[in-house]
Length: 428
Image 1 (tube, rainbow, N blue to C red):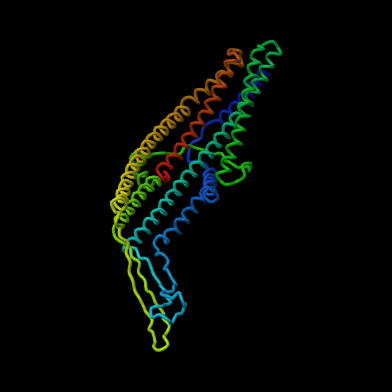
Image 2: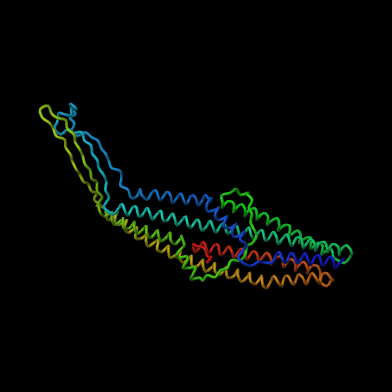
């Protein structure tokens, strides 16, 4: 009977060990397909991204406005009308006037204003790209976190089943006087801990599913299907390679470069403000014929210019302002570039540490923990190992199985953030 119980327990242990073993490779197609599906839905449905797209549309409509002339002015008036008679034919200079005028900026100003507006559009486009990268990172983080929670639930349930068998054996031994009550109590306490962990994991699962649904603009309670298959992604990039990718693709750096170009155009426009703008027009004056002779109508043409008389406190200051803005954004670019390069280094260190930890757990700690548990189980079956030692070995294996999946998810999250930082995917 004891041998049959031991064999059954050994078979159950084998199933649990196999189920909790890490897998390697490229991941199941269903897993990658589901992740890509969630990302596509988020990019299509996320309202925050829609807002950023509409902001681009707003700036696109502003650009042609900035390059357009002011509306022409049409005026009507009466000139030299006698106040005693209000007669139009009494005085020679009485006229009914119509005037058409147009303000014309100095050549080049309109083009610069339109160029500045176009740069604002380009800035909003890079801001949109940055939001896309952040959204993709958030989706991946939530997805990977759900993968960890589901794996943790599986491992915890398997260990719960194994612990139930331990409790059954311990209670049987205690009932025939071969076991200790403290062994039974210790096993029951450990079972309570596992039950609490299952409760906490299920709560975290609901929270993370709600977060992922929110990113996809879905109701937070909507169920999600997350397939198993998270595996370590190969990573072979050098830090110089990643820095080059960041300088080329980072929307944050591109945005600052466009800001610099915009302020340079604004500086050119400020220099053009030293030159006058024009107001040109034509005026037609209609006169009434007199009682003894005809009066011809008048036509007038005029040109007006503004005089930048206060250039020392206005135009000159504006030129200096834009030069300082250019210097400011150049410094901001260098600061952001340095911080991006630093973050790349930090992420590479985290990725390296996670990889080393995964290798250590997979090839060192887990095999040793399995062997230790198997040896403890064999010793317990012949009363050479006490129950607390067996239980301690089982808990140790359980914790390292969870630790492996935790490190695996951390590794994938690091790569997801690295893609956001450099501004592009890392797959070859």
